[in-house]
Amino acid sequence: MRRTGVVLAAATAAGFLAACRESRSTEPAPTANPALTGAWGTVSSSGSFVEFSLRAAGGAITGAGREFRSGSFYDSLIVSGEYSDTSAFRLTIAYTNGDIAHYVGVALTPTLMAGTWSRGPYDYGPFDREFHVRPRAPCADSAGLDGAPDPRAPGYIVMYYRSVDSPTETARLAALYHFTPHFVWTHAIEGFAADLLPTTVSLVRCDTLVELIEYNAVVAFD
Image (cartoon, rainbow, N blue to C red; front, side):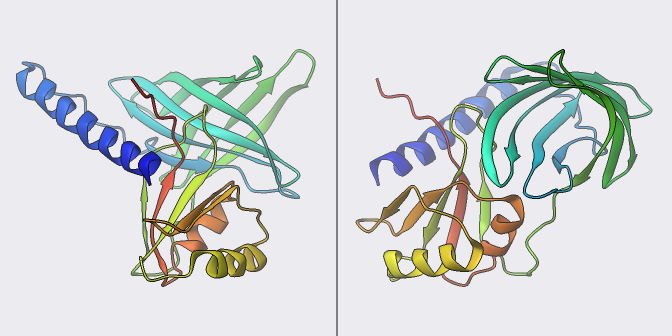
């Protein structure tokens, strides 16, 4: 409970301070480019894929994400880059393990970007790669998804409503969607932490016992 509470408190404080700073600024914040801003991912092939969340504004692109290989978490990544008025873009993808990839392309539609991906010199050469907008929860009344991917802390925190039997329901979801929880909480809050595929997240959000899902995050203690 302390950990989750600190995450939420930190997010609230950060939002308050950001609002204060913006109110003192004489320059308006750049408007986000809707063609590039959002959650993107490659089509999963045998459980292998790359996903990242991007924000594009003022000609610059920032973001973070993860790569999975054969259904298992492989590495976190940080994204930086630039784009033009035509939504053509150049991205540099820095992996936690030190690898660097480059992705050069264009947003063809609001749900599709295509370009050339390269990563090396010892991995693989340039090849065509598409990223699609990640699917939203397939239900009207879905649990919220808060936060953003943090390369230092991959995974998600799933919180149930307070009356839920956390061990029983977590075991049910794990068997249904084939994941292994890292932690299961039964005091003060009911929930669990796990590495989940994006498609699994969208389905878990529609479970009527789930109240909220958050991206995992690193909490600094003074």
